[in-house]
Image: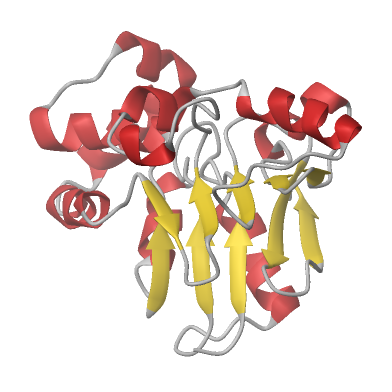
Length: 222
């Protein structure tokens, strides 16, 4: 492997993702890409996002809550109302138009991870975890790993007092858009990075070099 990148919540914005790949000159055979989840919904091209990511040799997908809704649909035919009113209706329509992709994308999601910890003890997770409990005790808890919105708040307090989350060297999360802090760039609190810069909330899509912390962004392309 050559360079290592992490990308925030893509939410079906395929053209913007491709613009970032072009900007960093991403190598599909040599570079590593870690997605923090929520590949689908809200944006216009969820199917195309998945199809493109399938081409990457060194790709790690951390499951997001929107991805899990999509997985439940592909696996069990369950289209939760909570999902369909947040972009899932359009995704179901896209699969109905291209039914041959259902089995392929089901296999894609079944290879996803609830979290990823690399050799440098960096944690990549969609939403967060309970920092008051050893991570090993909650690593199968989809509810907190896919839905938590408290970790970044704890990180902001840690930042204020010069503290850090000791279980990991760094933590990268998506899920909660940086617009909650009125920003559209990655936010760094303590040893945590917030990488969802709100492409579907009027913000941008962000891709970061994990080692250098250089990052690239793309606004919505009309």
